Image 1: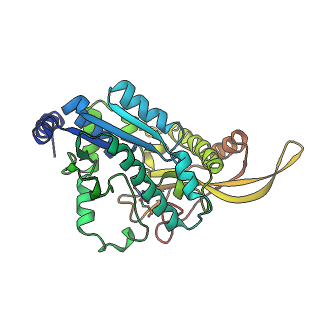
Image 2: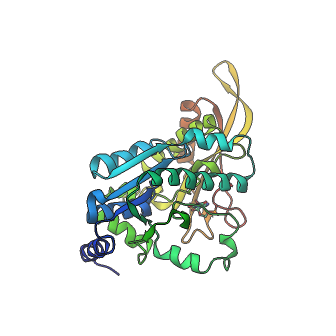
Image 3: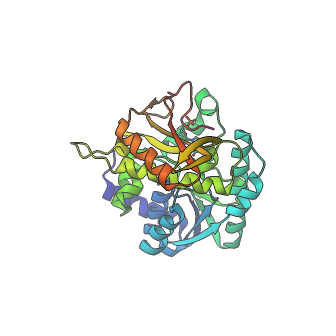
Length: 325
Ligand code: XMP
């Protein structure tokens, strides 16, 4: 258990010793781990760090803008923002198999990152937000069936062919320590305590073929759900966002009939998923209040043209998984 100011001082010293005057690159995903790693390394070596933020077009609403605001504007970190939406959508066109989709997203991610990092010719180090549980997990790969059901991809999975030395300043920390470190480094509390978001992003929350049109609808529905969860506070000042481990909307490429005003509609369905879990290996569906679910459903149907039906997922893990793909 670390005292954060001491930890920061020690980590800064060790990062400076390791990299000297070399340049470092880091793949920023918007997630907690890579964000905290970026803030820490920037704190240590300033402009010797360049972050590459690949937007695959499968991020949450305004996520790209938020990452750029927080790092480039507020913290003054050098960030290269690559909008690779067209490239990802192009490669995903016509692909419906969940594993095939994951592989494509992972592969294209590495491809884009490699192209960008090759432009930074002086970079000698690749920084990653690897945390202690990742170290343990990859040491025991294959032993745990629940972890090998889906091929996981995240920005930590960059290839050795980059020929860079690895800088992993969070390797000894657990998630709660990473969060404390993030707050101590000045990252916003809401960002540091965000629910986890999978590397393939909305790609695994749009069932079947991924299309930009679907991603745009899903992003808006998801933002409404999250906003309403955050807007509930109980007597302990805890919201349903705090009380759930993960909550999100899923796009179902199925049309059903509805009625709006005098007219008949024939539009898509969104499923809401909210779970409570300690370790993400097993999970319970969250017993959200019916009024809250009703409010979310009304808002999505009224505000997101193209969605006329909202359903709630009441499946536990196992036998269901948390994500739908
Ligand atoms: P499942 O759906 O397998 O998810 O119950 C368990 C946890 O893992 C997350 N997840 C991923 N995270 N890359 C990631 O970084 C992935 O490919 C991936 N797939 C699932 C999921 O969001 C949940 O927290």
